[in-house]
Image 1: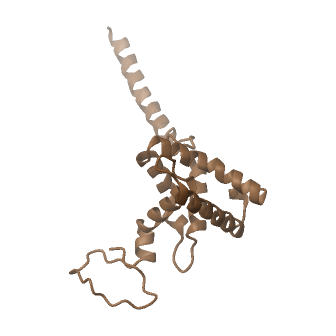
Image 2 (image 1 turned 45 degrees about the vertical axis):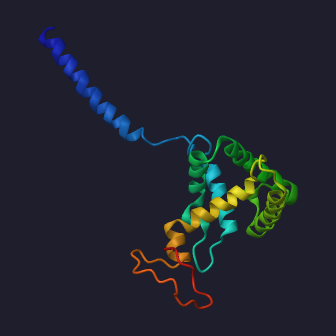
Image 3 (image 1 turned 60 degrees about the vertical axis):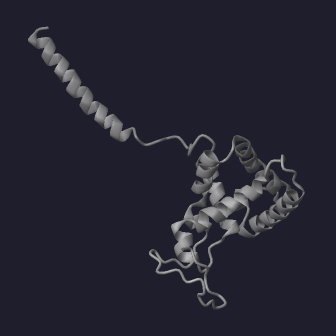
Length: 188
């Protein structure tokens, strides 16, 4: 190798490093809408709306403030058995079918009152299904959605500190704390 080739190769390496760094910095923006292998960002938005319908914002933040949609997507992907994952994923289309049948539109197109009516019916349906369910039958998709909403909200920072009473470092255990009607439950 002569000096001219060596300078050319060093220039190529340095130029590639500069161009590569620029590509790396600007190219890191993901154009994929996938959140994980099972769900995309639209599913997470749907889960947040389902959660907000179940636990709406009142004097305390609602489920959407706790981002239960992302929690649901993560839990189903990482913690559910494959057969429960299939039921849950199919439940997304089942929910929209039920919404189209009852309301004539998809769940995301419905207003808050219509969403509440639909989810109330689905809750009654899942209760009846669960009551008559055999051990080998799959879980009802809406029951899973409701359970994940409650778990995701009340274990989040928002749910534990705004909806429940929370002391970061509790003192001694006192099993006989006076309770006044209307007091919040304890998160810790």
